[in-house]
Length: 337
Image (tube, rainbow, N blue to C red; front, side, top):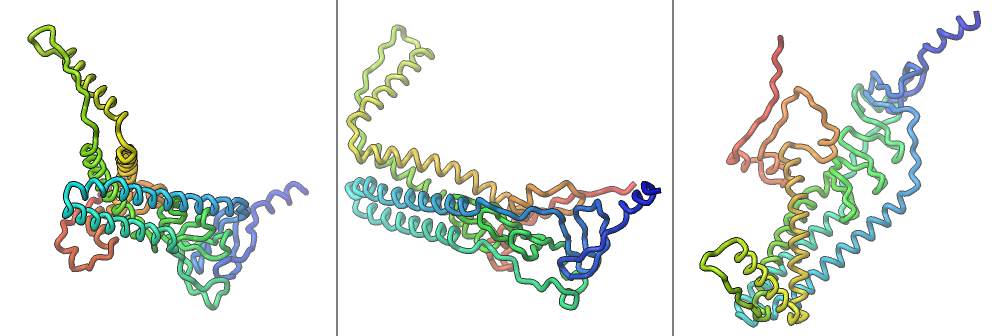
């Protein structure tokens, strides 16, 4: 008889309070997640809310920001020291033109980096919660409770454990800017990537031209042919001799030339990496998503908008300009049988 009385009690609903509106809710004892029928708030039970390493993450981000700023300043100062004496020796007009262009690119890159790094990524709006008279029906639809911030979290927000706050429309946390990329600074981050890619392309072109201008003459040794025909072995020997002569002349390269070679290699490598990141970011914006929403997306039959107007609206252009852009719609059609 004791066993029979004990078994049904395991399936009796538990009465608890909704964190959103404060109303009493009957919940199954086996349910780890439940939704309030009045306000629509979602409650997740047994959530651990401790975070011991947030200070270490913030210190890591600050170190990354300092390293990136020092690298950018070194890049600018080394480029001015190594490139512009060569440019001005060629032509005074070209020197003034390239100085003006370099100043514009440097200021725009540094300014956009500071905006992306030090501007708040996007704080979710404040909303009333906790009591029945203030929370209307469906007022907290699909809201969850952030156990780290101890406040409601909207469906479009995500808690960043590195920043320690909830970020609205969070894309990802970037340690190189020491900040999250969210609704408030996503545009600044994209502009920073564009300015950096353009700047690295400009540095690669200018440094390669300047390095070739001051490069020592090549000590080229002609390769003799044993027959009158040009074969693959002869072409390989010619190419090998040209590379060796280029490397032999690099020994007599001055310090300014070595700095130019370093700037060229660095600008090409950084430019390729950031170009891939920029293309990825623009592809997500094109389909109207963020990186996190792309990871959490599941296959559904809903209509997905893939449109150039998403890019226009993202950069804040007037709505009237979108009528001149082609519109592409891609939808998945379901057939009812």
